[in-house]
Image 1 (cartoon, rainbow over the protein chains, first blue to last red):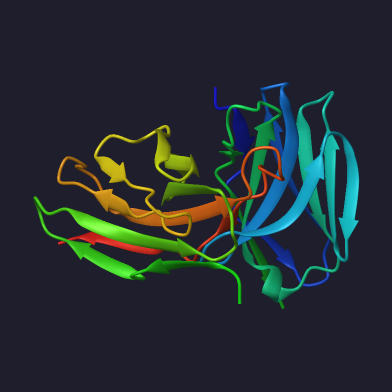
Image 2 (cartoon, each protein chain N blue to C red):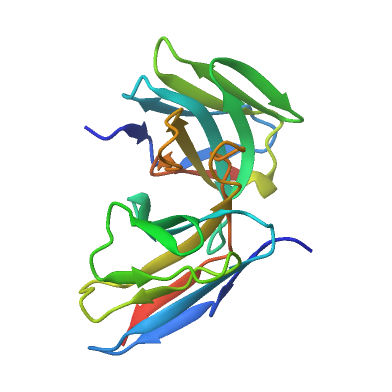
Length: 113
Length: 115
């Protein structure tokens, strides 16, 4: 079993839809959770960063962490064609000895006009 | 502008050849990382360095080598021992231990193809 599981998609939605992207994980030591957006043939860019449980909102994006269920989500409101990209979740533990991030495989999102 | 640069954008390797991918950052980050990205497999860590003149193997280090002689630079060599080098290679950096270590910033990537 992989430490982080993410549905690869593709997820295809019409413009204006609310999008929900999810990851599950198995390591209860994970405390830091991130979402990256990656456009085709580009490097990933950090979208959202959350520590421990709870919600974090930034414009049209909301990141949600449920540590009891080992489940994280990224919601995109009023989705736009420019949101079409691959979304990678990533997470890390509080270990002082490593800076390693564990990544999901990414979900490809397509928003059509 | 602060950021991470990678060169070249595309690189072609012949059989038996070693090639070196460049990664430079001017973010004053202590830690730097190399990942390999293949379709359907996400990002896999090759090597990382938390300080100058020190580096550690990641999950798939075989067939690769790195150096960290300067804080700003972390070149990756793909050796002839790497039998399946075709992939998208990503360099990243972060502040390092004790300071937002988990927030990694990525370069634009280098696509390596085998001739």
